[in-house]
Picture (cartoon, rainbow over the protein chains, first blue to last red):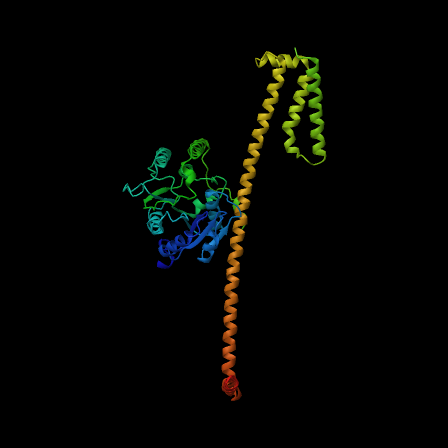
Length: 254
Length: 170
């Protein structure tokens, strides 16, 4: 049994989306390999201007070089496509800037297996230990979306903006279709998952403060709030999607 | 009442537009798909300019006072629809572009992984060749005395050469 234990990383692909993370991404890969020794690591270099991709490749990770900057969601979706085509039963995602601590992937995978969830979010706010203090604008934004997601899903969602997640293959497959936003997937995706019938759970994690030049700085702009409200609104207006999901985006086999 | 001059301008303009669109399609500069709104607008303008009663009744129906403002209204409506159409097209193009970028990235990943495997197997091959050489050398050493004697001979030669050089240096 120990040979195929997902909580050690067996059958898990860890996706690391990275944009201009040279000097940081190597350390993240190392942390992931320590936490999940049997997992495979895939770095998606989202058209970085620095040596992010080379650093990842030389650290031994599978590396996707996107020819231009396509956005956080597009980078993640590239990883899902890779995972589904290569047949991984579990997919984890962790940011390339070192904000997420890889050791929490273990309890997240344990919850995924133990509670038979489809997706587990690593939440900064679930433990309410106050270790993570975002800026005022962010606190307001995250609080708003947390409340909306909680209402829409009928279950508490404390950290809908967290990009620290583990999921099962059907969720990754679902994300490969055109339902997935290629700019900033967020609370709208969680609501969509809930409406599609997937089971979402949260696990308390600690995060490090993000470096200032992170790819998530856009999350404080008024446009982001507007986009998310619109996206959530139309998600609620759309008819519920039922599996099997369109697989047109997956027809090209690696 | 719309002046005859304006009527002529609208007629000539919209007929000219219609002919220009047909010419663009004939030269394959414009796809048929994009002509729908243009052709429709040109026809509506020709109708409005030529058919006095239609324009008068339309003006009354939309609550406008001047008939020329009805023409402007339809002109602007057309521009807005066209811009919306382009926004939709751009969104579709962007989606396609993103999936192309992703495929290209995935192919790069595949190629780099193959390169890594090739480099690894080349290394293995070289190691194997090295091993074979060692094995060959051992076999030669086991069979004859020449093979074993040669290296010491070489060493002696080298020593002699060194001694000669040292003598020359003095």
